[in-house]
Length: 501
Length: 51
Image (tube, rainbow over the protein chains, first blue to last red):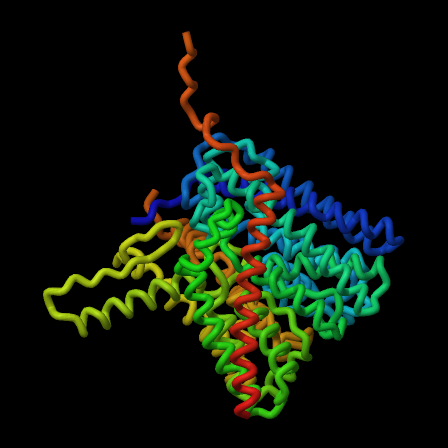
């Protein structure tokens, strides 16, 4: 039975959404400072307007709706969904004022693609975009990957345990450490250490590729944020192909893989528990998936005749498979080449890799390794039950931190979410087909938007039909929040009209 | 007379430092990526030889 939400429910949701808006406004101070330092006056005004708007609305909302009422899980989920829908509105303001987008819908699409770490872009003339605006695109990916809510948790950590309900809404059911604030702090610590080392490695390799030191540092910072948070934006329209450097591509590999690791696994590895890397069900599922998909993709590439020698086959195949499987979306070839030159098999494997995605509790999207692993184990258990004598006891174990017997209660939600993912992928593809794009292109782009994969074959461009832009935006937010939080928000809206008082 | 030991988590072994932890984490990811690249290289070599 649905209960009609009362004023207190809306106060709570508004109060925390206001805090998130305030946080997004504060984040705009970084590109604003860069715009001032680089003498980008117009862009500085754009950021000033965006910052003022977000800070004022955010502060006023949380001040007007201030409440001490306890935050239930349903509030947390609805807050996460509303924050993810509203934060890009504020973030889109400086993008729109930069003049690189056809209208507000395009700027909102870009901001959503940024926060949801998708990587699809509608920017016009990206290669001549002001540095501050380009930095903002990448910073949105970093903030989105780390979790807007986690950002707010860290900064406004005054509510203590109450904010735990917010945290579960972001598709990160697993708390790394028991205390949610310490979990957020650990996530930031991992990002900081990887950030220092990854940026230094990228800076060096980009300089070796012939880019001047200051520009190389700017590119390294942006690329790190895009790769570690499995985002996929890049400072140049040619993505990683701009550098024409195998070294840059190979430095990006571990950064993308680290981004697709769950923070729970990071925590264990940081404690020196290396065996977890080989025993964890999710790590195993992803290793098997990546190996199989890579094998088929390479066979496809070989048969298409695009790459016949070892080195280009290895370099292009591995980079794009890792980029797709971690749902990053960086590319070292023009997107259209996937369909004009790569044959049929290899792009199909990239779509499959994006669909599977990374680990649950990471910055990656997609179905997630844990669900694939659980369903594979369940299938194996069923097959063994058929083959073994009737009185034999067949028990499959699942290893996450410790061994646990496979339980129906683990498999059923995994199967449900898997079905929802497939519906999301096919729903977007159907919309693409409706607007006349062929099946392969529609499926590729839909999966890229929903899974946060971000690779594109060129369907997503400024001239794209507006209903498809809206469809992809919905796929991005539903996929990023893994259904539950958007469903909770929809449930609140339905309860307003149909709920019992 | 000896004072009784204070119970509680503060008596446990100190955790690894940030530098040590980070080294552990990055080392494990690097090993994983190297293994993955090695498997990919073998697959590629076989496919390149056969096509």
